[in-house]
Image (cartoon, rainbow, N blue to C red):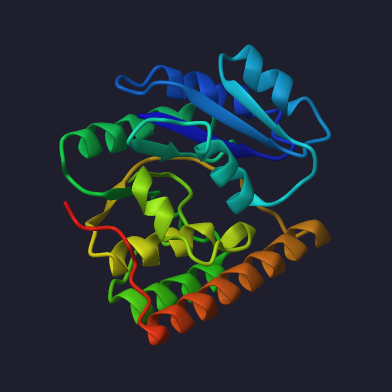
Amino acid sequence: MEAVIPAHNEAATVAATVRALAACPHLGRIWVVDDGSTDGTAAAARAAGAEVVRLPRRGGKARALLAGATHTTAPWLLFADADLGGSAGQLARLVDLALAGRGDMLIAAPPRRPGRRGFGAAVGLARWGVERLAGRRLEAPLSGQRVLRRDVLACLDPVPPGWGIEVALTVAALRAGLEVVEVPLAIEHRVTGWHLADLAHRGRQLGHIAWTLAAYARRREAGTPWGVAAR
């Protein structure tokens, strides 16, 4: 199994994330995709022991993940966000479960934090859309922490814009008849605030999720095969 970490201006956290993943048994190479960063993300990741892929300009999360995946050869992939820090070590549980045959896609569901707000609209839209398109209601439909069979990537048609990647992966896997399992894990993210840049980020995320759901609804209506057989 190999890991792919998309990262844009994550110099402050990416090294700790890489080191925590490097300590996970059964996990091989760790690829950090520097998505057009303007800070020291690539240098920090490389110093921590990761293989680094540098994209010349920012293309978004989906593009970064898929660019990293093209460098891997393992039948299983671990996707992780760059801001997890030491809590990325919790993802060893997903690796163990996947290799034990406990699912085709395993998604880390972080604990709920009372009073924390920010991505309610995005999570709600994603949860509603996945349930409508694939018949499953997920606790963490936007979790970027997941282990999956690499052939799920072949189901991504169309390829979603940046923040639509998790929704697309989940819908594609479920529609292909694969087993998707959520696993509660105590992972930690950087908390997003309420500055103008944060609000713009939320707006882009909502737009990407909406685009992805609409595109995959059209695909379902067209009866296009999803392309991966269940184990």
